[in-house]
Length: 70
Image 1 (cartoon, rainbow, N blue to C red):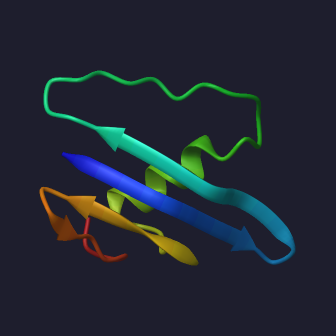
Image 2 (image 1 turned 180 degrees about the vertical axis):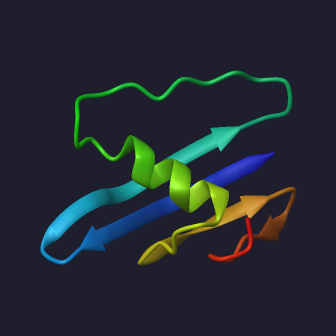
């Protein structure tokens, strides 16, 4: 299971993600949709481990993920 709890990310004064929650269980398929600038790519980068969230946690199979370790 992949779980993100209260993910928040800012770029300077711009709030890209504001306490976003996300959960995906094995075998599930999800789609992220939204307008340009909605934070879809930022969330995917946080979940992939290539970008650090300012707040919140990302957990994969019960273990916390750290930025920089995709």
